[in-house]
Length: 142
Image (cartoon, rainbow, N blue to C red; front, side, top):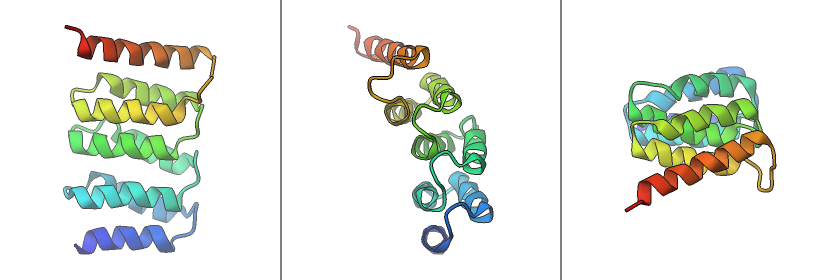
């Protein structure tokens, strides 16, 4: 598919931090084709630095998108581009633990594994651990 190839190529040739490339790649996170969305999530890792404010702002807007497939890709991308320990990012991903789509919830758990540093004793980290334990306990009870 040409769109997939274009997104993939942009991720390879754009310079890290190029705001136009970041916005263009982020816009593909809501593409109807799954391969294009996956390529966009992958390309973000090439065109951004972790914690890039432009990418975080754009991807965060997609976390609450009405279509589950867009939220799936956004949660996955957000977990890859946010800085570990970023409280705002952690809160945004924690909110997806209550998503109506089970895969979004699973991807949120995976993203939190990247965002909450092991051994972090902060209140936010404790809250995330408690939320995760609650989810697993609720899902596998009985």
